Image 1: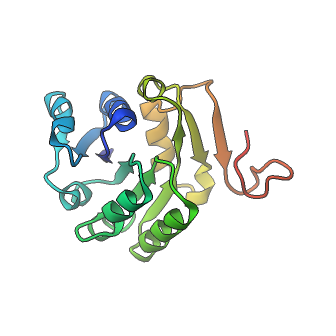
Image 2: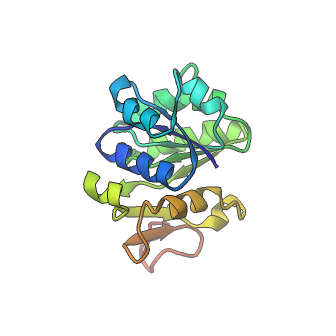
Image 3: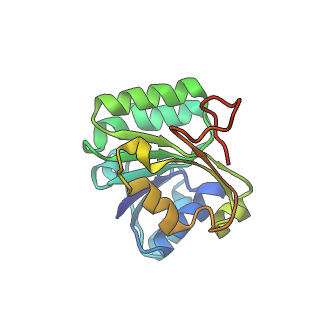
Length: 182
């Protein structure tokens, strides 16, 4: 799968490395150019811009720290919503506010793309080793599209047997409404 990854900091760097090691065709981008060097040395392609990364990706993972940054990356000039093809997936793995996620989802939907919010909780060492806690959406929410579920499994971002919370139709525990449950 052609995967783009934006945000190669403490959490994102380890996660992106797992994707590369899982055999995905990885293209990376980070505003700190030095963060991309180890990925280029390991065989990943380094994009010069978000637009370049988006143009060649079936799925783009973002691991960014602030709502304003993920909004700029996705919705700003040359951002993901204008650069991804219809049918592409933006997998948001940072922890972002509800209003931001709703805005991203609305803009991606209007462009024929899919937004999947799957925040990762834990320390960088856990994310790099595949032992982070992953809030994962059920496959059925995308009409049976397995793209994002497959990439999470292939990269083992949350190792088999480790904690995962699933959110989606029919998965909420009593009293939690639409919140995630185990």
